[in-house]
Image 1 (cartoon, rainbow, N blue to C red):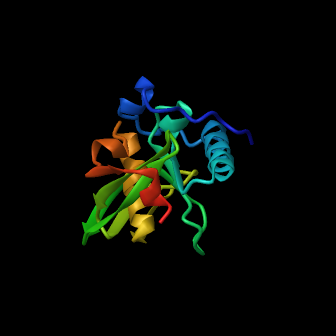
Image 2: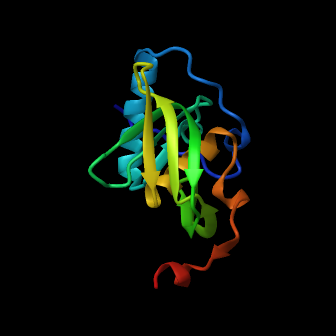
Length: 157
């Protein structure tokens, strides 16, 4: 496993749509392992492949609950309900936060590192993280959906 550099806002790769994963091989496993280590090191809740310079439909989410790290290959939101407004940040936009509307509940259909299909449900923060990371796979960063950016003092209180 290796730490990968996180691409910052302004890099063109963050605005590109990612291609589906077709090969479930050692290269994909290495990418997922590296992303997990990079996410942990950065103390984030999610990371998408374009954030480490790879234009593939791969992301990971770990909100610190009992489910732990969730690997999503070729993810697709198949169901969403409810609404929540909350603060979001992004490892590609360090130190910046904004209010974003997201669904309160989502169901995601994806594949694991071996190509096996599964579905996973998220509520609250996990739903927000799924939406945020899947947006990255379509070339969208949270600042394109933000209602308003937050000042640093709003994040500390």
